[in-house]
Length: 391
Image (cartoon, rainbow, N blue to C red):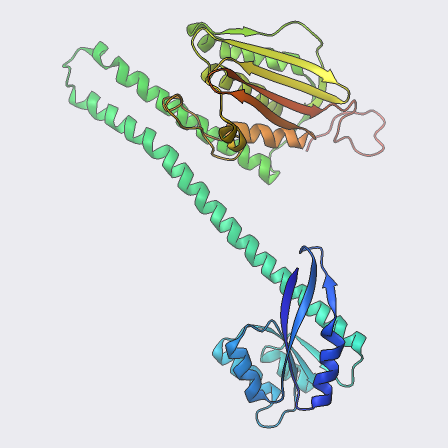
């Protein structure tokens, strides 16, 4: 529920009471906020009294009579502007004229209501004011959230890039100073570590680009029939060199080859992320079991490993942006903290999701479910040939 404060300023007590009665139990519903918008009513009989109440605040909506004893309603508007008092003002007057409306608007009035007015006219004006105020506040809130997200993103990226840049800088100084003399083989380890750090930075940049393109909707998507089994097999082939070097067996038994109307690049991101992680976080001599099947209208892709596993608390955080599980077992494993959050975003595009079941020191199973439509999801309405379109 949202409550807005209304100040009624009129020298006629009967008018103030009538307005207060009309708004006493009045509430509105706006799609932009949860629950009804209700109003707290305060009254003032003079412009001077109104300014005192406005200074104490907060006042969201001011119903201000033009003709008042002492300073006028226009004078109140001028004082509000000078004191930088911010609220939406409706100028009320029995002497409706274009000149008065123009003068009130120039001094900051948002709307104009001529006496006599009906309760319905009053409520319609208050409804319009409340909607404008709520939308304005929501816009400010979103703008602030965007600033915070941008700040957090820059902070995280700076933090993630600072360490590898520092490491590479150290290795370069080592190569320059040649503490081991001119024996080039002595510097192979420094070179290999620099390459690893550069690969990690490249992965972070690639993941950032994938994430921003997906979230902004600016990524060009080519929807075609995708052989999911072929994509998974390619991801296995990519992960195989590291798996073989560490004695990790990858099992992908023969089975059906489901076809999914999708952007092939997005499906490759899902498969590559899960297969790479299954090898990266596995133990030497471990195993990766890959399954692919159709369950009703759902395509189910699962990757199980015999790796380090996760606690329940770690698993609950896993699909958030920039989340990397850091402990003694993962401290030397490179990653951007974006791969699984991107997998989740892509799965949701296809009406699905991703989940994990894990046990520390036993392993983890990641399961992606995607809606399997038999027609291209982005074909234009009435299309006779069912050819895929671009988005």
